[in-house]
Length: 167
Image (spheres, rainbow, N blue to C red):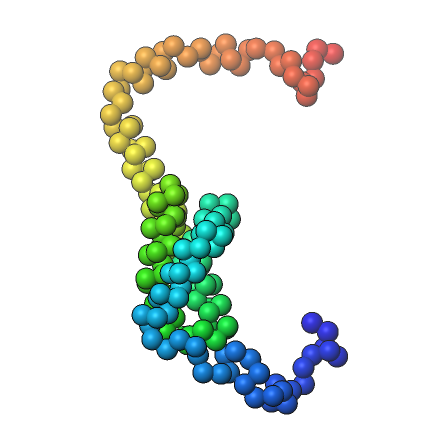
């Protein structure tokens, strides 16, 4: 940011009061009306397609989409932050169930990704241990006996790009 074009302290107080939507009283104050408003908007085909694209193509989780929709409604003066917090679970579930109905597997956005990765790592490790326990010692010995002796491997002449060759 250019320091000479930055707003000066108190500049926001020089604009006309109630010039922004969030500075005026909200259009909807009842949470039930807000739910009806959002569900009507989310049921429109163009909006639904955009949300499904965000989930499928951009891999956004439902929590992020929901908070974006509600934040936009608050910034647009439709309802307050309090109403947004009250209607968020309904909007979240509507979006999630809509995505599931279209054959997607949306992420909720509530789980910790690092914790999920650690769980997957521990699960793979335990499956590996289980597989090793199930392997019989006979099979391991037979596989070792089928391998070429070490002296045969060591006496082969190197013939790669970096080999010296006989000089």
